[in-house]
Image (tube, rainbow, N blue to C red; front, side, top):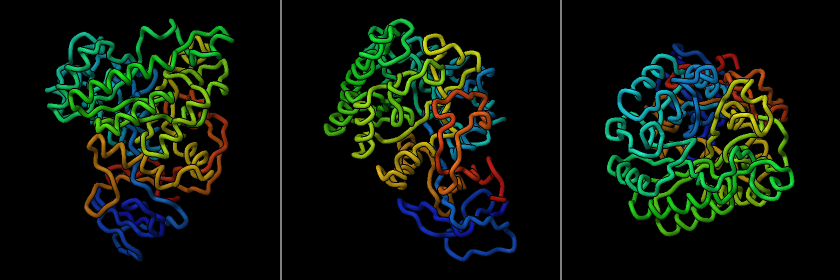
Length: 423
């Protein structure tokens, strides 16, 4: 496929330039103005923006093991629909990718069915049970890093050993930080005044930041590359800020719902149940400050689809997790860029550049690189409608929200993964 994407505002090396892009044999062959080739199809991108494809280092694609919720094909289609060209699925699967054999089961499905780059995490511990380290050496060449997402590693000793192993392999430990001893049984909301007033079981802020604190000390001791998943509390942000100042090799992510929503937005609806839960306005403001000053390095969706029945049981009984791949950019662009809180360049850094750099993934629009990019109409206003999602999951708290910034086409490895040349 030979294409010329003509007349767009293209993000290159941290700034936007009006350029044409020639894609030939899957790679970017030229980037300049006034391109023409009789052997390429022309795509009119006038008044459009082209970004390097987004990278999400925290998704759940549910395959193998739970394909009634999502599978790698539908999840990767959903990612392309949202402008993503690389996603990294977490290992809470069946079987858990904790050795070469079980990882290969997942990799074979990826090779056959994914429409974008899908680079999985291996688990930190066998079966994600927190008792015995996984076969990290055997998996390291084909994983983005190691995580026990969904459970977290409760033993400090196991986590220390995992960090030492990951450091030797040059891989990142991506940690779901949650001290289970501090979580109410069946917890579903922020465990503060809100839960006491409404009588709902909670997940305390301390359950997150106490384990962040523990792991930062271990990361300082071991020197491993450490990454904190789905940061939601002000205390976590401050701990990470201080650790960075001390030279600890730490990065972190937050998610769109923690940046935009708070516990005051809660409804008794499964669309609002996730882990960590929505926090206070003070927490949200601390996250925004962390985005502004660089303490928070990237934004990930924690895309976690479930069946409609599993999300129809209200706050207490619905399963944890919401979907986000198909609406994250327009929500963030509308709430933060159009309002002047951050620049568009900063948002692209958070969603594309930083996650790729941290996890050693190819990224960027440059001559010779694989064509992984996405085309957006930033002036297009529309309403988020989960009924048109390509994901099997439909549960998002942003359903019905009016936003700007529509994905028109996503190209992954030189092939159109979403959209068409008729923009």
